[in-house]
Image (cartoon, rainbow, N blue to C red; front, side, top):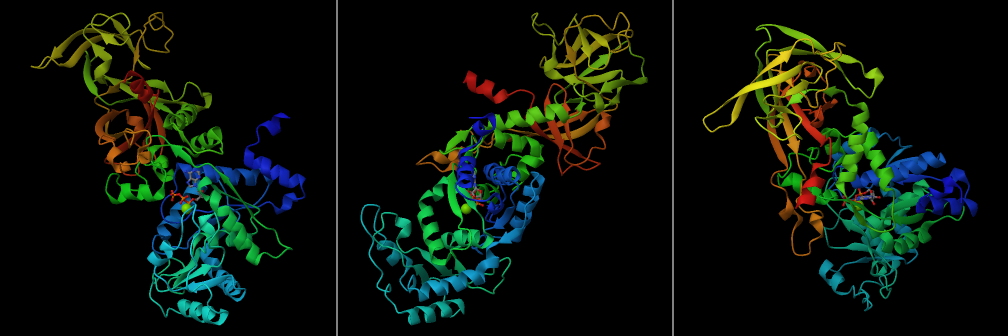
Length: 561
Ligand code: ATP
Ligand code: MG
């Protein structure tokens, strides 16, 4: 096996086999088929990367198809958000399609089914129908309406379409097999009456086709060669094929449904319905809350499209469902931002340091490299003055040899600046250090090349000049759920595992170069992590989101626990 072949996933193997067995490359066509009932999430990213990835690999078109057959749950807002997210991820669809564009064709085919005695109008209540469904081991019972005449069925179905009946009075069912071992084949409903306005067809239709009936026929209309869906549709494949059998023209391509495993991410839920509850019940502020595993939430959190694509490519696709640890996603964003994010200084838990031998009222602007790993990233100036902030945790009065930060009587370097010596500190009534007094060595400026500047000092601290510091609101995030897989507990609702401390808002102090960053701009606060400018940020009030720390701190906590 060649290297290229070895890297194929099982779906690509299926396609390669089809190509060997007579499919021409020109007939390959894929689709990504979201229902516009919510925002896309990280699980969808896997499906998007799979389908669009196949399109790129085989030079085949990929449609974006909205599976919009349930007016009760679907909205234009979701259509717009889905398009934005797919584009942002970096993919281009061939054509934008809607299942609702096929309502007429689906209706015409339903008439054909009735004429061929493959469908009938059932006038029982949903409870009655459920009681006849049988069990996996017992066959179902036939409806008393199963043998209505073609004429009667046509008349009733047309009347359904014309709005003559209220919801639930009649449904159209496919006449398949009430004894099938596959319960889905026991005369599934294919149309129901819904007197609700649809976001695209408005009130043109009051009967709506069901998912199974719609999906395969839409694939056929679009001539999709491989219709890829998640494993829970495995049992639906038989029905998918049965529906195609009723309409397929032998001269046209017959779509194939194949299944792959759903991707679940630890410490969150990936289901639009469940994510909708988080929004509706106010656990998060919106679909794009940076704690959400939605594409829009990740974007607002500071994730780049590259990091999400790399994540999807790394986990690949599988034949069995499994849980992917969120730290893998975080690794990808950290890896990407490490390459691209400019370095800046910000202090989030400030301790005042006074440089006693620094002339009062003076300041200087020091050279600071934007990204030591990237020659083209350039440099900026950061101001130093007599009073600065450092992080509280970077100072101790006394500490052992392993503490390479600021301690009394020892030297430490200011990033891009001078070497300081901590001389004394001031405490409040409770004994907390509230100020440190230092002296600096004026000859030790970093990069100046002097003997003093080359002196070996173990610790380097980030800092900001108090006089020049910009105040900013900093939003720190933790896992949204305390449990690794909150929605897999039999007797507990996933909402019971919501982490009450998933958001902490603090005040931070930033170097002045951060004043004019654009919304979404990503930076590394040196020694602290990656942050980005939140859309709530204004010139008067800066707001930053923490994307991810420099290291995986959660893993450490879990190890200790
Ligand atoms: P949800 O329960 O989140 O609404 P869904 O499957 O109903 O999920 P759709 O909009 O119907 O959402 O999904 C569009 C496509 O994305 C489908 O092909 C679906 O199988 C796929 N998909 C959805 N969730 C995942 C996931 N977690 N992992 C991989 N693919 C997914
Ligand atoms: Mg779905």
